[in-house]
Length: 381
Image 1 (tube, helix red, strand yellow):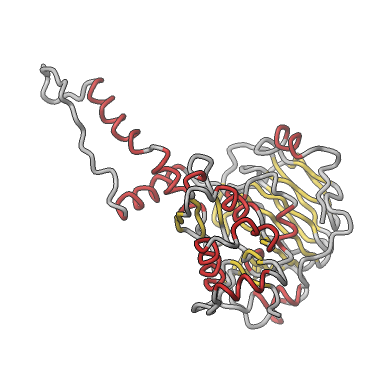
Image 2: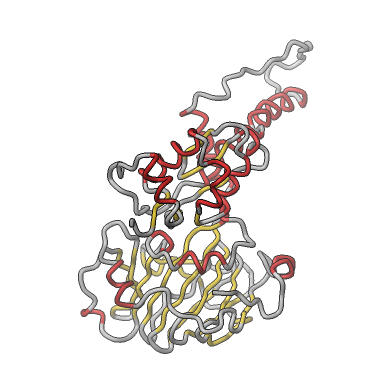
């Protein structure tokens, strides 16, 4: 699968469109094929661990239901949509789609969402707070996109936040292989013209409120930032009730001093590698021994589990620090290249890992990750 930005380089796209304005990319994927069939998608939505919903109208009122679902017969043949989140957690083929957008770092990724809709189906006019590439699969879907503005939002249903009517700046019919890029804040509405599937690659953001709240929990859980304000140079105050400018600066500096690179990277690494949806992990250790892993690597690569979040920071990678699935991990300080390999790539071959396969620490850690299901051999031979 190869992405064509209609002659633009990824650099030009980022400079001209990313978080700036919408873009229709005709035939961004030539000969695009659905990553799964509607029947396979319906099967996923029957599973407890898969996040799914369906949206439809009943008596001219919007309705939303959450899976798992046992049947779809009652919905009829028109005017409904089925949505499955985190397709990349369950369908390995979604990784090929994600790789096409790797000019944006994975820490910004939310997930790959798949939508199947019957004619007339949609989720209503709404505004998203994230960037998304809507990749049209089979079928056709009409999209209308409005401009930024003070659009009034309202609850069309407890699970559906809609926006008022808007004048479109884009009114387009997407065909298989076409892509609609939307930055945050642009109202949009998609209506299916014939049975169709679309695959949305979303890039999340977090509000300062959410980040500060989560960081406060992290500080409390780790019992950090216990230093008191020190003011040995205090001068006489003429007003007992005042917080003067000097004291305000002390308070501000105390708060800012907590936000050093170590704390921010440790918190952010844990926060950003947490998966919002279930991962396809085993319930107990798979029982591999180190020799099993090294021998199997001679036959086939290790594949990173779909949806597993891994990252490292430029400030701490040389110290052997990386983050996986909400945890901070510490390798020895000479493992910078290994950490980059683990986090930047989706497959690990024996050749890739050859510099470290005689390192007991590395082999033991790899074995632990294989037993936890973080990396797996596609077929055991």
